[in-house]
Image 1 (cartoon, rainbow, N blue to C red):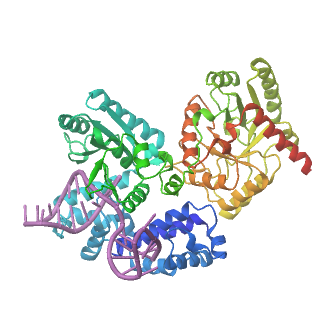
Image 2: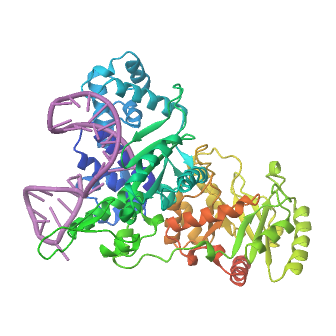
Image 3: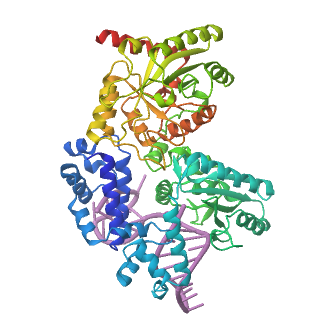
Length: 593
DNA sequence: GCCGTTTTCGGCCCGACTGTTTTCAGTCG
């Protein structure tokens, strides 16, 4: 079993334990370990072999036993027992907004409800309102939550959510009621998909609060089936939650002196905040969204501190400022305390564009136009990679087309020197793992990107073998979008990521981070592991039009989330350095023959 | 279930909002 699968099993145990009515701290112990395991660079099987499972933070005797069992047998007696005791349909019920473990259990034990259908029926018949702790409003909310769950995944692509959040931010700014409006939450942290947008609205005086509340409520969608009403999820003195164009937007109204504490608190993640507050407590402080209190008052008096900035806040707790992208509870607090947070890659570090398509295959820009766009943006080079013959649907280039393109590249290189076009291809990886141009054709190119576009459905072992064979091909420079996933549309195909990473490291092949917002493939967690193994990451927009330039910024965000610095990223190399890199790859190929 | 700058037992982040209650439990982030 891979780490990812073991993490999923541990998380599932946690959910089942919640439904079983287990102590919340016990369930959290499993949740914490599930998260820790997901971020682990080393395979659990190896750790177990070395007797090092207990070194994972949060793993004690009991959980180490569960992990060992999962590693050895691929199953867990505890999980199987829970699965038998707790009806699986309750998992879906627990996902409904407003329904937690207590309510799910009440529905199950008193009315025998174990499916969404049964729950809906019970609400319509008025049976739910009779239960202790439930009422007519609960029925209405549950019905709305069931409907929402059936019609929407609840998640948005990053770029879409960012756009919607930006609109709301603008509307609040235009009102003149707030000197500061910030997008916080998972958008600020750079998650690839988001469930809601968190916005911080900092007001200068209390009198701004009522009109601010009114403004935000006014931005809500009309309520489905209730003309005249708006889809307001919650409205209080300091927090207004509305749904706008389907996205849940939580706006926090915060007085000016609390801006830094609120921004920190509202950026999350929940895990990061829990760890931060835990540390604060150990130091004798209390941190909330308004202030830092406590500290070493000489006469034991409580003092309140209002940090000027997030930097101040972290410094008060003895920490370096933690970039938002790293705030996932994966060791960043410890690193900040020991002053060893990495210097993260920034957009200004990018020197070239890798993985671009032109009108030669299915791109919207000609090669000349693309060069012009790159130069306008101050880039030093581009790595051209139109599609190969197997991608007939995308106008893949025949070997003859490729030769003609080479002549065009040469001419443009002369005309635009020192700007440089490196000539390559995005060659299809066939079902058997071979590349779809003859070796002699590939030999003439500066670099080769390999990508799977067909036969996406394949048993895991076969898919892994296919990728590993392609990686072992000495022509391959970069492995593209390895999972083939399309976020919120299509699960990627399954492959053994640990084996693929090992193969990339062994053969010195770079790993693409495809930064199209519908792909973000592979995700930041895998990139982090890749970098730990010394694999170079190529942040590629897979550019088909000018939009691709914007996607590079999103890729940069994801690379930061993966703790990458410029030294980990292929396209942070200068023109001369990447030229050298490609030449070395080709040299190695000759030697190996 | 885990863990120890105060701890091997007794804690485990902290506050807002809602609905069902007459003071608070449950849920959420």
